[in-house]
Length: 357
Image (tube, rainbow, N blue to C red; front, side):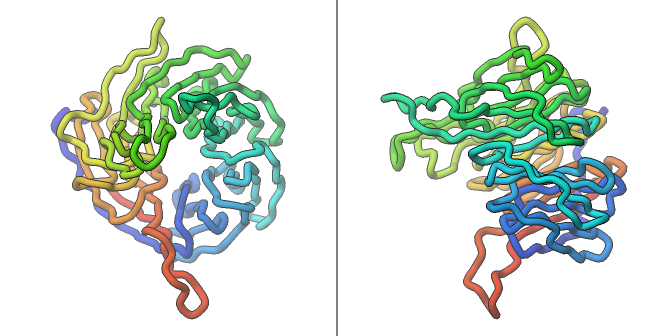
């Protein structure tokens, strides 16, 4: 376990530009390749050569990717489809319509047997602009091997983040209104739920609607804590200048309790979209967009909650993962928007970086 005040030095060792903004990325088990979910499709990036190729396309943006086996990549997108792709054979083996609306986020269980995907469109349901009830189940659990539907579980739209516990038994889902629900995937029972208002804003300047919510969540390696990430509330949500915010909750007791959150003086402004937890529980990463301050990706000591490293990447961080021997960190994202085409193509505005620490 790290000393409370020990700092970590992050050293960038590799960097790659891709032709489309990156929304999701995952390293292979051997650490040699990265599957990348982009606005244009699913790419395979070789970390040794820097070469990449387009494997597959969705009908819209690819929001999530994962290695379902040594040679199988699974992806989910804003078309509501989950797709299985055999990397060796360069072949789509299954394409399944899981949602009528977007798949906001997808998680693969650590034992690689289950997939969980969340959906939901925020539509005003009353004069207070509270969300309408769901038009379809907001959380679906599938067999990672066959694609068979295992569970359809309710929530309040829109549900933007999902995580599966280290023992592959529990699934957590968080929504726009800051409500977290945790289900037992074995029997479909709701284990607990709670609401934190700290991630949700009410727009009164440029829009009358709720904005924000929980954008990422991860279980601790022990499974008894749940990390949440997003952005603190603000008067003008469209400005995106809320506090860079994480919270750590204990959920296994009689009543879920807030254990820690971003410390005063350790955060600037911006929407945090990414969490990654180191396997030995010494620290975790939070990243996203920078609105004001000096970092948009940072490491926090898991025990003390103190910030122990930070980066100002110059691009929006959309995904992150510890991989290899646990001493490497994958960051992925998008460098703004595509510019005017030159010689018939857009500029490369996708980004993948590898760091050592």
